[in-house]
Amino acid sequence: MSKVSQFYNKEKIQEQACLWISRLDRGLSDDEEKTLTAWVNEREAHHTTLLKMASYWDNLSVLNELSALFPLDEINKKPQERLKMIAIAASFVVVSLFTSVLISNQWFPFSTQHQTQTFSTNVGEQNTFALSDGSTILLNTNSLLEISFTQSHRQLTLLQGEVSFDVAKDSNRPFTVTAGNQSFTALGTVFNVQKNDEQTMELVVTEGRVLISNVDEPLQSLTTALSEDAPAQLNGLIVTSGEKAVIEPQTESPVIKVPLEQLQRDLAWQQGILIFEGEPLSQALLEVSRYTNTTFEIADPQLANLKVAGYFKAGDIDGLISSLNSNFNIRASHPNNHTVILSAATP
Image 1 (cartoon, helix red, strand yellow):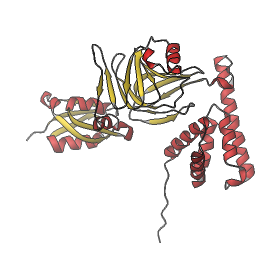
Image 2 (image 1 turned 90 degrees about the horizontal axis):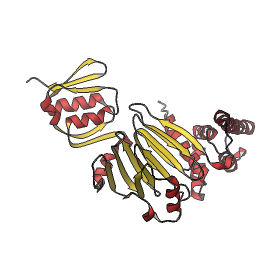
Image 3 (image 1 turned 180 degrees about the vertical axis):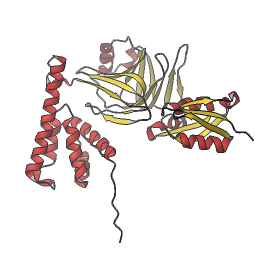
Image 4 (image 1 turned 45 degrees about the vertical axis):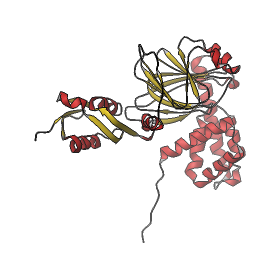
């Protein structure tokens, strides 16, 4: 008789716990409370991970709500042990807050909702983070994002890479992402920003609206116009759901309406997939290179313009080489561990 044990992804549980913490911070609906209770009671790992994630949060009310939702006798755990875990988690929050005050040599009252943080991913890595305002961000490979939240504004700076934003609505605190010399202000939305360099970037809006404006636009003017529900007073270009903007030097009309299939292709990286539909091999290899430390060299220039199509797992170099070999008779050689040279195979 065999015994099968199911393994649970630790990172997936942590991601789910972060999402629940962000929802607790903004307040749960009745249905969400029931769903959270069922999730916590599903297994002990959910319970302990939720407490651990709460210990990193900058709002003590989250722990209070956790304590109210899950009384000591509702969890399959000794009361003393449960109480000890809550106390430890609360102490982590207090220590974290006082440490940040000491480092900055400034005092920010707990009610100011001030948050400064940096998020990053390595080459080939993707990661999801929950923010204190209830928003979530998904960082693509080799990305760097800085955030600075205050009572009046939510300011984020994309220093490199690509990020998808699921923004919690707050008309009193605009959500603005700065990339190079452009800024993108969410008018309650889900959108994706890719920064190629200081002047070239792409915006894809899948829900709501995003205002593109110059980075010099005062944050106060954004706040005033949004609080008065008068986006027409804002200087810039509004991109709506289902639209894509490609910003580059000397581009007069950057916004285009794109079909659903193209949106799905542009955002397929969020599922760890790269989709090509007739791009030149040289262009496809540039996209593949974002997800690996491997460098590609095309030995035969005529191969550079070959049109490639297909679905590829991000970072799967072996799968890509196998597909090129079977479909185009392209041979790959490896002079070292981080270089692939592509050439036409000898008949």
